[in-house]
Length: 497
Image 1 (cartoon, rainbow, N blue to C red):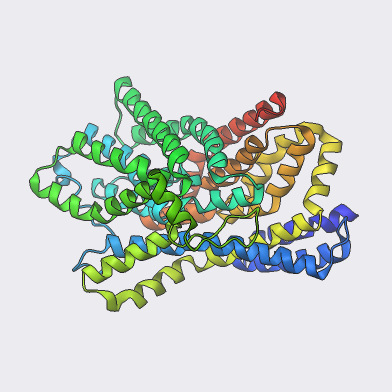
Image 2 (image 1 turned 90 degrees about the vertical axis):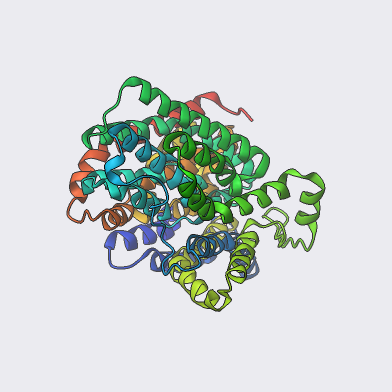
């Protein structure tokens, strides 16, 4: 019976989401409301009000450190993507290449790959919130693909989602796991790379059905680009940190691929250069601030504020979210559009408010469950029953919550502390277990009904959702089996770090 009480916060969140009557923010509010009395009255250890206050404050601090990535990324994308005379921040795609009739089937396939695996992840990394899907659809809409094919291409922009929204989800998961964000991101790169085999298979099937068949040489070329992209991402993560790694790794590759595939004339090159200049300056500045030792030390220590020794510190001059906000202000000033700041900030808040609110609420839930000993007790009970094989249920639990919530953050907040405690007790690699938990929650969100509805809306495919699910679900099963196979490998290897 006690374990039922300890499960109530997760069950409340799950039941609220399954009801379909409220959004994830309401679910997180109810989850926190259930967590507090359970922790105070039924926790396995004594849990007083002062401990509750500290746990809630820890959750608030985690949210405060992560929030600038979300809102800053949204603000920067809106401002940078809007030209001086534009009325909409959406890219038109007209400067990307020639008119529709000039594209051969091979050129269309290469543009589809470019949009799905480079442009889409890049846009998602800056902002999150499905902007990668928007960028992919904008680039491919000119080809008049069937909506169901365009929906799949849009979903494929989500394949490097642990680095989405300036890696805010990865930074949050690292805070829950109490390990460095770089370490978690590098370990997460392993399942992400393996899952690329599944996503490439889905791309090849969709391309063939959309009339973009190609020989094995083109498929090998695509594999080479994927391998190159992931290696560059891993290197950038190691040296720059996860929040700016994808921008720095994919930015040059996007330029190279654009020049190789499209061979633009001077007019198209100038137009593209104007579009990407804000991103080039931002990425260059962030890379310099992290690669130059003296500058890195100054920026990371000046004004640094640390509230808890085991949680991320706040360094206003080093935080990438600060750079995004400052970059947005500079662009508006240079364009003499400072008067639109309030409107842009309001749009960013309306877009990101649910993500921000749930970030704070789930972070507080995770800290309370950990401080009250509930996460550790669950881990001990699970280990007693299943041993190290308990890790095999991680992809099912985390993936299931991600599909329901359209985010890996709820699963990480609810399960990451207990997964880490389980890894300690079973003698498993802490980063490997944390990465499996994180990758399962983030990557299987690909199949979320919310994400599917966004893809349908962007591609004009309302009514096609069931047909698309029929195509992608076998790949979802393959992804789940792959993650379970990784869990078996982690359980069998024991402590490796």
